[in-house]
Amino acid sequence: MSTVLVLNAGSSSIKFAIFAADERQQRRLCSGAVEGIGSASRGRVWMSDATGAKPWDEAVEIADAAEGFARIVRMLAAHRKLPQPEAIGHRMVSSSPEVTENQFVTPELVERLERYVHFAPLHTPPALHILRQTLRAYPRVPSFIALDSWFHRDLPPVARTLPVSASITALGVHRYGAHGLSCESIVDQLGAAIPERVIVAHLGNGSSITAIRNGRSADTSMGLTPTGGLISATRTGEIDPGVLLFLMREAARTAASAEDAIDSVERMVNRESGLLGVSGVSNDMRALRQAIATGDAQARLAVDLYTAAIRKYIGAYMAVLGGADLVVFTGGIGEHDAATRAEVCAGLEALGIALDAGRNAAQNAERISADNSPVAVRRMAPDEERMIARHVARLMTSRD
View (spheres, rainbow, N blue to C red):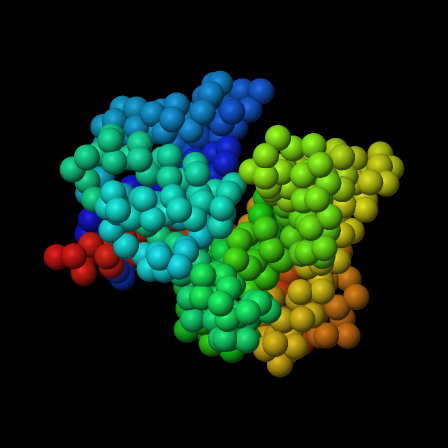
């Protein structure tokens, strides 16, 4: 077995874990995170060991990703019982026309990834930043990328192809999808008992729905970028392309340059819309639920838009699969917000989906569907870090 450090960088957090891993099994030695990077309030740095004990947990101000990563390096060095990493795995959200496989990191690979940062503008820049920091901090330790889009690499043409000309498709414009590591971990957890037709709803700061047939991706809501598909915390999700053209023209009237106009629309689409934009309150579902309790109509509308979009996709993917045997809720909202699960499933009884209210409200219930529900409904925790460790172990073996 090899000791693998896994890094999962987001726009305001860095998750990490260390595994003793080979292709068959991955034993978690520790996990943790740096949270609240760049926040006006204090962030949090924590680590838990294999027993669940937390030898490190503190509230601190974290200016940027570089400081956050430096804290992880210091934490790992200070915990003398942990072995030093022999390989490092990085989650990379989006692939590109030039990078479609999980692979060993070289300077040339970093350059190719930089060319397509706009395929995942909220995720790729911080991930690349941490990747460069890692290469400096661990110069003798091989690094590898694990693509979130890799799970969707074999989408059927009807799902993969976007409705544009062949000349545009040739530029690499097609559906890549995301949250593949989450879907892959759900498939792995279900194991040999996985039914033929599964729909995974990964609901969190970013949200997506994936149709899975016989353990393989059949369709997924995110498109060329994670902005497509479902409304998310700050992203529009699906939107009439004419809206973007209108906004581009409006921005061009006052922008200093075409690039500034593009940047302003990109900011609107990715950072100022979604739950945050509609509610005007927050991009956090917990804060929105609190606002709804006080009678906030815009918060109610934002959540209704969110749950209605999820419901539509579940129905659509039941059509894609010819029905469903299992619906899985995962991700931060999918796992922990019983109200969202209930609101999504309300009205889907005609499609064979019925929740058990008591199970749905219970904190430790995995199966949450009613006994007489033709379609099983479960909530499951994804384990993206374990999937990354497995990919790294496989890639290390192939390099030997």
